[in-house]
Length: 223
Image (tube, rainbow, N blue to C red):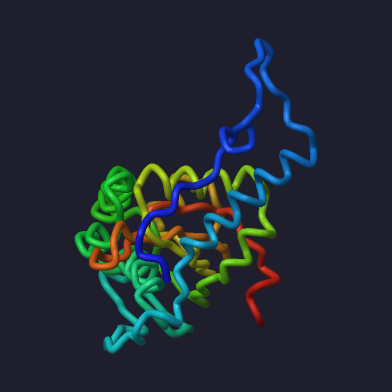
């Protein structure tokens, strides 16, 4: 596994060696696709293989209750990549958002503050069931929208990540009575959320750097 950051290829590489022109170059369909493929391959070079991580030796709670709220974990937490996501959903029931902050990048601080405020006001979730945690293979990057791959690249570059992986969580929830009275945007139900988990060096902790509701190639998840 490479432990240094590999610069991602951009438009400049495709245009190297071209004669100067006053007109803005336009990529043909084939050239554009080559650039997209190069981006995917560079991201895959940074993709963290969970097999290289030691197995977790932690006694994690599979159930928890606090103030009438209930948490249930139906799957295992296999590696450090999935641990930040586990703590994120556990905190929605226990209120331990300080632990979640230690597993999240600074850019997510505002969202965590809002979630904690909701919790203290009796809002948020009455129950959370974490059905599964799945670390997706690097090849999933070949199957998603080009715009989504660009978003991943932007996060990796901006945060200076040396390696990363994508973790999907399938989760169900219900709301507290106070939250239901405020007509939440999403109804209670089962959803899939995807997390970009990475680190800035081999000796730095793995953290959540991006969260999206978009599913990354569910065909990779074996039922």
